[in-house]
Image 1 (spheres, rainbow, N blue to C red):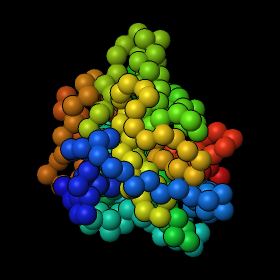
Image 2: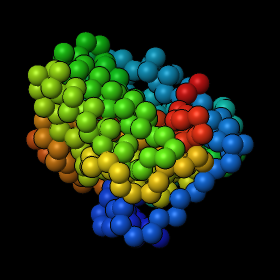
Image 3: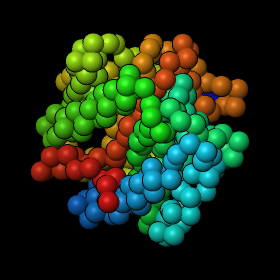
Image 4: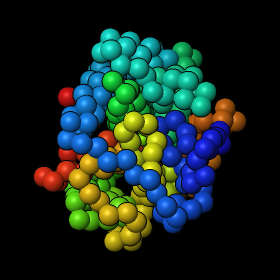
Length: 283
Ligand code: MG
Ligand code: MG
């Protein structure tokens, strides 16, 4: 689904942002938060983290992604928050559930029943008191193949490396480079190669889910906006066990790998502070 209403820099979709044109060129309008506003974002992030933990505890063979979606919506609303994905450019659910070769933006369904060996990515967003949180985890259903366990581990390591690079004084693509370098290092350590999905990436976050700047998951360091305290970014690497090419299904949302390889997706919302990176989407 190509929306981009009011956004000439990227197409905005579900739990990620698709770059289409100017990317880091051109002007960006980056929202800076006060320390008090960062605290408010932590509260929103905690709702997301709590919800994802609930879903991780419930995700098992025989459970449908539709059931997980209902649990997520209840968890978010019970916290006095609003599920940000629901109705977002017409998205019909409170989470994205992407199974196996689905990379991101999978639509939960009562008919999509999880099976032993599935690799499930869960992406969740919530708005609390006007502030957004956005995070994703990849979950093993039952026993997954070792190669997929490592894929998810590599993606999580890439996220952690990206978070560590979100420091004042750096530049935006220091994060991109750290994500890419960590993914490559993990692939080398695992004696394999991973596709680093470059069609989608992270984004600024705050009073809206998807804000400037677009954050690529690959690239040379030292480019893009300078990282300053008060910036908040959703960092979200997506890795595949095969190639990096993706396509969107006819449902207008679900993004799958072209080669059918399985994918992992990890995400945190992170603030740049004087004391370094602060992960917002934790309990
Ligand atoms: Mg997300
Ligand atoms: Mg996101």
